[in-house]
Amino acid sequence: SETHGSPLSKFTGGLYRGYGITLMREIPFAMIQFPMYEALKKYWADHLQDGVPVNPVQAAACGSFSGGVAAGLTTPLDVIKTRLMLGADKDG
Image 1 (cartoon, helix red, strand yellow):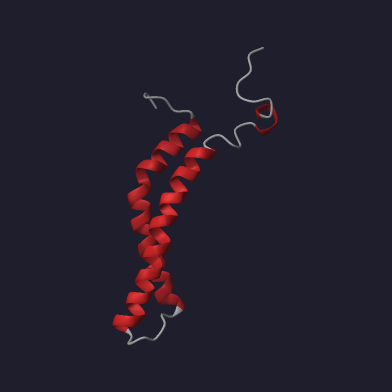
Image 2 (cartoon, one colour):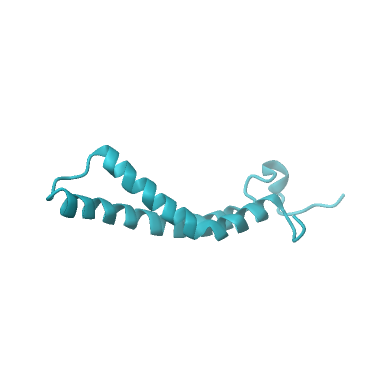
């Protein structure tokens, strides 16, 4: 019988397939999203509300915007991750 991967792979199956590329996508995503989120909250509080901290709804809006920007910028990495996890080749 032919085996693939480590001896542990027969127990874990595909659980860890794509783990490395998932990290390679998540780290840039987080490095874009969280600083942008904090900067947007600070800008909103300092320039639009005269120093009053943002409320939860405004913070959610900042998070949604920064998450959308981060997702848009890291989409190519997400596509690579998905293709590696599914084992897709050049033909799909």
